[in-house]
Image (cartoon, rainbow, N blue to C red; front, side):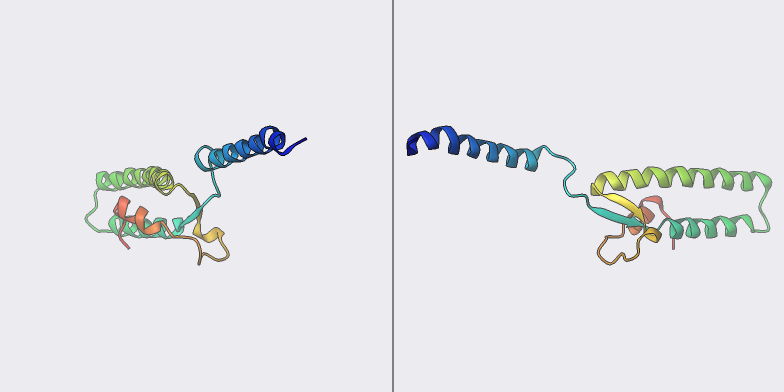
Length: 122
């Protein structure tokens, strides 16, 4: 086997395969190495619970106002779930509850973004 045949029958097909695999890995294969983010769900619920508790314990609350607050609490839970999905889609990352991590120093925290989108006050 001479050098010309080696190049034609071995080196060129190997090069084409390598380039094809590199292009597939770069542009087609999803997900790539997964990225993670955290959300402090407990803090969000605690902040919202404080808001609802303050509103429910006001002396001048009627039963209709209390019923509206309960509906608002249910809406908050659904909105939180929807916002988590939106943030996850925007950041293209896997979101994990902050309490589930032993160390979160290298994982970005998305809680402030969700808090801002939902209008939750600290």
